[in-house]
Length: 582
Image (cartoon, rainbow, N blue to C red; front, side, top):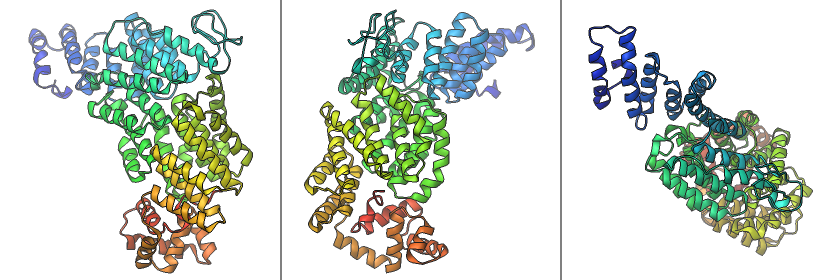
């Protein structure tokens, strides 16, 4: 037992079994006699120490007990989904009906965390009654499965709206109601446990999000998260209700609610080690939207993402942080790995945020073909669900910026028009629609300083100060009206909390030489060292030397910190706001 790491009450629980087998050795019947004790001790340890429980279930299985499915469950709770999936798959093929159902649930969890929601839904159907039905309904709604058809014998071919009960028809917003109907009908069975109630609430929350009720969806998903807090780490979940609530919050710019829900989930250890990275990554996403880039970067590092969707969020966060830092060198360095992560992820509603960020970076790097197939899949998914503004508006916003980088005015106008159609659905789409018009004005050199400033401040009022500052800063670059330029630059500085130009200029002149300021401004504009060298008729080695001196003068420990400090020092110039438009 020492090799299993047992102690205290758990070890004491094994005493009678060891005593009963004392004189008989530890082979054959004696070893089999220990099986029930190992199994009981494992059940006791499952909630508080799943790693210990996994070892105990392994010992019970070695003693002849049918404990492989429980071992898979305990292993999954430790966060080792690869090993859990292997154990579960073996049990699904060879176990008893009860064992196979539990193993199918564990395998479904592994598939869901890998981003394979359609496969997870199939396994959850096979697992039968219980909380899996609710989780399956949420997965189906997120993939748009059954859109245009209901769960009975009817199909969605007419012009009415689907009712999800066997005779549904649909177009427009009703196209998603087939999956929604299944989400509603698949959650009525099973005992009234906390897990079952949470699964039902999660299904309802996702259903509300795709029927155009974001406030209701957010409330329902926050309730689901609160419901599970007392059991904390002791439940295995295909997804976290706190994470889904945060996704709805991020998609609707309810950043305070998203962050508060995630913080409570982190404190409660909701979902254990398996879901801890997801909560941290979504916290990082909210910080990135707020422009708190250093904090977001630390959270990404702490998260240590392992699962498919979590790895995608982590990759997109690194891409987004590099872009917002105007660090084209770093963006190019991390881009291949980010593309590799994206390739393995099917499209569903829950991965549209990182997809949008990847789309902007792809346009910035001239590699839009890397995301084209995923964006086409996203278009089809959103069309099946009726282009629900909650899910579609942030992606249209990202694709607007991708079109701007690619200098595709017609495409930018298309996404701006989509945002304008969603304007009445809530404050966030309305703010995005106004900002989109500001960006179109920049593209066509018809800048109205008052309109741009109002749109920029509208974004900042929702917590999106970085986006607002970038809009105002880019308008300042492009306007030919010096008074408007001054107003817009002051707006950009105020939204990012920067000092006024006189103070900034004095500090820069005190710390940096003229040549260092020139190099710094071009690096902030997104140029590589070679491009800076060509522009200033220097060698690339000389530019590297200047950068090293700048970092030393500013007392910065890494490139990101140096870029952030330079943006403060050089805030009087337009290059301080994410480079040029194209």
